Structures are given as C-alpha cells and as structure tokens.
Amino acid sequence: MTPQEYNKAVAEYSDRIYRFVLKSMGEQERSKDVVQDCYEKLWISVEEIDYSKAKAWLFTTAHNAMIDIIRKEKRIVPDDSPREDIYEQGYTDLNEILHKCLGNLSESWRSVILLRDYEGYSYKEIGEITGQSEAQVKINIYRARMAMRKMIGKLEMVV
Amino acid sequence: MIINRQNYFIWITDYYDSQLDDFQAEVLLEFLGKNPDLMSEFEDYAELFLKPDDHHVYTNTGILRTPDQLTNEQVEHYAIALSENDLSENQKLEITELKKSDPRFRESISIYEKIRLKPDNIIYPDKSLLLKIPGRRRLTRIIVNTVSIAASIAIITGLFFIFNQPGDKNINDYLAEDNQPGTEPEQVSDDRPPLLDLTDELPRYIPTKTQVAVAEPLSTSDIIKAEPLPGEQRALIHITPLEVKENISLDKTQTQYLLAEIQPYPLSLPAGIIIDTDMSVREFLTYQFRKQILNDEDPDIENLKAWEIADAGIRGANMLLGWNMELQTGKNEEGKLENISFTSELIKFDHKSKKNDPGL
Image (cartoon, rainbow over all chains, first blue to last red; front, side, top):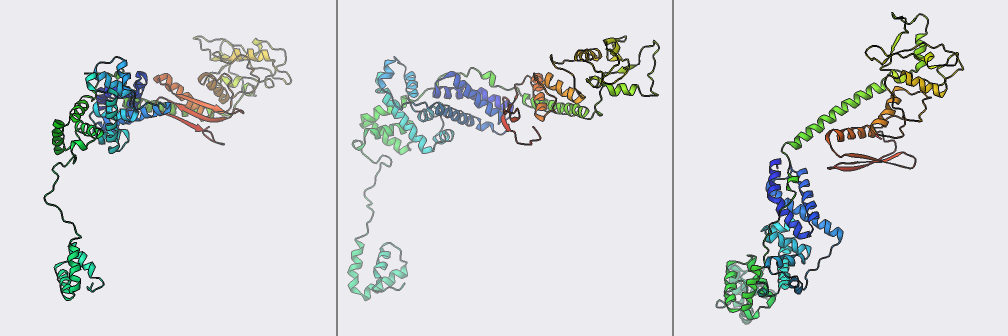
C-alpha cells in the first residue's frame, strides 16, 4: 500500500471503524484511541498490506483491540435484559431501540450483528474478522436476532 | 469362490445387492437348479430387500413439515433465515406459501425484516491526525540516516582525538622544557615574556600541589602575567617561567587563582571542586561531556561508556528533530549498570546488562 492509499483508507474507513468500535464499546475516548492505534499499526505495516485488504485488516485489528480491552476490564454484559427497560427509557424510534438492544447483547453477538448489518459482510468474512468459524458466526447472528426480538417484544409497540 | 452348500447364502445376498456379474448369476442359478431345496430360501430373500416407493415423493424440499408441526422457535428460525437470505429459492417459495396460511410466519417475517440495524451517521473526529504526508516517511528515514551517519562520524572523530593525544603533561613538563639549557625563550620586541599558545593545550596546565614550586611566597603576578593581545586573542597568554624549588607548594587558594588566570575562557567547574590532582585532556573532556551534555550533577572521569555516547546522540536527535526518545538506565545498589531501556513512539526495548558486557 502506498502512502496515498493509506490516506485513502483513512478517508474511506476511519468513520466505519470508529462507528464499529464506538457501538461495541460505547465510550468515545477509548474508541478514538482504538482507531488511532489501528491506523498507527497500519502505517507501520503499510508496505506489507495490500490496499484491497486494508478494510478487513482494520476491522480485524480493531476487533482484537476491543477484545483485549474488554477482557482486561473483565467487563460482563448480559445477553438479554428485560424488554420493559427499553420502553421505560422512552425510546420511540425503532433504530434507537435497536441500538439500545444492541448494547445489551454480549460482545461476540454485538460484533457479528454490527459487521453484518453495517458493513454487509458475509458469514465467512465476519468469521475471518472475529476469529470464529462460519457456522459459529451464523449461530451467533441467529441467536442475537432472537435476543433482540425478545427485548423489543411486539413490533406494534414501537411502530 | 466356488459356490457350495456352506456359502450359497453369500451368493444369494450378493445377487440381490446386484454384486454378481452375469456369469456369477448364472453359476448361482445353476447351483440352485441342482439344489431345489434351497430355491425357496432364495425366493424368501427377495422379500427382505426394500424397494423405493416411486409414488411417494416430497415436493417440499426445504422444510419437510406442515405448519402445525413447526414450533414457534422453528418459525422464527425460518423467518431469520429468510431475512438473512440464507434460503434456497424453493425454500423461499415454501415460506411464502406458509406465510399465507400461518400468522406466526407473517408476524415473524415482518419483525425480522425490520429489526436490522441502520447505520448511524457517525464521523471520526480526529481524521486529520491519521493522515500522513506523502513522502514524509521517506524524508524522515533519509533525515534519520543522515543524522545518524553524521553523528557517528563526529563521535568517532572526537573520540579519535580524545584518546590519541600524546602522553598527558602538566604545567611542570612545559615549564621544564622552557628551562632546558639552550632553549632560551624567544624575546619579543617589547621585551615581554615569550608567548605560549594555550588554545589547544589548556587543560594540561592544571597544576598540582607537588608539581609547582616556588622559592618565595607567591603572588598572582609572580606566577602568570596574562595580558590580552590586540584583537582580544585571549588564548595567547604570557607565562613567566618559574624558578622551581622543592618542598614549596601552592596552597589551595593560589591554585584556584592560577587556574583563573591561565584559562582563555571561563571553565565551568562546579563549585566545591578542588583541582588538586592531575586531570588529563581525556579526563577533562569526559568530565565536561557528562556535566554539560548528559547533565550529570556529579560527574566522574571514568572512561565514557557506549551507552553514554548513545544517550548523548538521542538527546541531540530529540533537540534537532523534536522527537521524544528516551534512554533510561537502571543501576544496582553498588551503582553498577543493570539494564538499559529505550523508549520512543514506535519502539521500546529493554537490554539487561551482563557481566563484562563491553558495550556497557
């Protein structure tokens, strides 16, 4: 990758990486640090990484960095939370509710859902980023969807 | 294998499994013709083998169940699979049919199609900090290489001159040379004492208690008469040769005053340091190197170590290029170096000192 291509990767992917990390971790400052670290590592290895693989490389690096941070802090996120909580907080927009539900998912479920819905990655690509098998990714996505539906309840309540 | 009454059943089994070729089949039938009591057994075998029912074929290739056989969880599973586009075309058609007859499918499919996340418009605020100026990396590398080479040459050159000076001399050596018979000092026109260029040899003129001796109590003017020459060439100092006698030495105050008189520029000697021992050029420069460059508050005059020179280079690079590199050392209780750690924005490493490590 040339320096010009590196800058192109910054322009095209930094927002996506930041959004992925921010939605996963929920903290702006640490999310910014993770993104900065990812691009520093990319710059160090700029000559070895092909531009066509930069996006997946950045997502993989960001995901690994997040996992490290979360494991260090031993942060425990419940898989489900009572759906009453969602409505008690006064959300009426479906997307807001979905993002709130997303925050209640486990880290592994949250990552696969974000990569699937935001980036449109296939099961195989998500597996390469998160280090899971293709089958495991599929299972996690299905379970995450079911969990989100449980949290939301009946659609008529929010639409 | 020759067929007989002990193994005929294997032949029969193979016959119905279509494992016998035409010749073997003829052999079997011929054998059964010669043994009619086994023919009924042959016919009974035929009923043991199942045949496919050509009239009963599933048309639903995907789900294979009727709606009333599907649990709610299975319905959700198919609804998710449909929203994830994991179903074949036939399965999609089946689901479409089921959707018409089963309200659970209608609700689940509708929900899972809508609860997909839509990306927020989130912008990374520090994008400009991530951008790199094209060519900067190469330029930086060139600068680093150039500075490294230049610093190496400068250090090697300096060390060459430092460590290749002729044997250290003190003031008495020079005075003795001047007083040797037949080496009368050259007289200048204004009858002043001869000039001695001390610019390069200044540190050698640091005297010691036992080496400078005079016949009578000394005054400053008796020892050295320093008069600046026109043009402020202060490095050229007049020295009146001393009459040397034994057992008379300068006291501490006079020694310090003598130093003050002969130096062309003020020496940065720390307060309280008593110059009453020999200090060679190497020792003097080592002292000043540690004091001025490494900011050592209590420098000694032991030989410079490799890491000290490296430390000086790092400090210089930081000043020149605005970098933030750091070389830290750890010492044990005896004051001996135990480890060195280097830290910069890009790399960090530790080096543990070994016994007799020549580099440390």
